[in-house]
Image 1 (cartoon, one colour):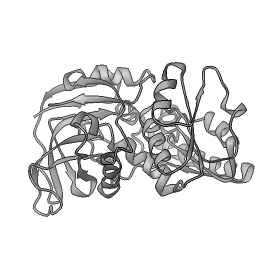
Image 2 (spheres, helix red, strand yellow):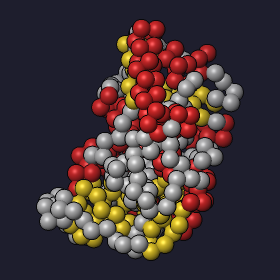
Image 3 (tube, helix red, strand yellow):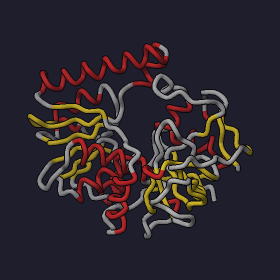
Image 4 (cartoon, rainbow, N blue to C red):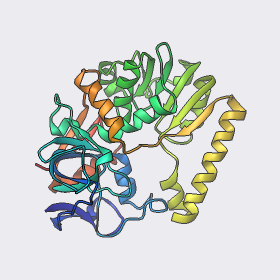
Length: 332
């Protein structure tokens, strides 16, 4: 099969699109014929080696944590899927590999693709959907009347989280740049704050939940908009920055210490909670997301589509930090 491989950590041009062996599914795996994948910020952080204290890749490695495609083969113990099913998934960090023509994924992480989405649209959903689900449903289920503040509302996680929060009945405020204001309004945000012109600290207060996507110092600033008992759900832990400063092992320790300190700051300084958002590779959660998509509560947000052969350009584009929605990799 064709795949985008890296033989070492580094910049976008470390990718090599070449022939490699098609993976053999384990007993609980489904082998997916990849039609589309997508690129997430965590992908370039892994590619650069910023996560290697927690995730050590065996080189050459195939990256990619989003996929939509067709089941080509099933393992001996697979009961949930059959050959020909159209599915989508976000595999675990320890078993990436969606930048390829085929990928093997444990059936527990797979769900049937929404019938009302193309493969390219569906490939934008799993990682950001499961991330937003963890923050808004698992960590603290939003309910009607709650107020949610979503940073980076035009990004992958933000654009999904706005729609999910609105479905759950929350009042949603979101930040974005001037050029993305109309897009974010179109996703359903009740209040859009143009961070190039306005300071959200002057505008909002007493929120139940903040979904914070930018890391420090924004995380500390965002604590100020929460009401007592509120929750800050953070997407960034600072691991790549600490890895760069201290190396992979000490960087991981420094990140853990930083998280503990921030939790204490939130609790004792502001009377609120903080949590690190995790993405469970859960087919069960993804199936619930499928139901929302098929009910037209959630739509895909696509920025650009690149062929697999242009994976380097796709990574360069996401590193600009100016994407609107998701970057898709068209494999078939």
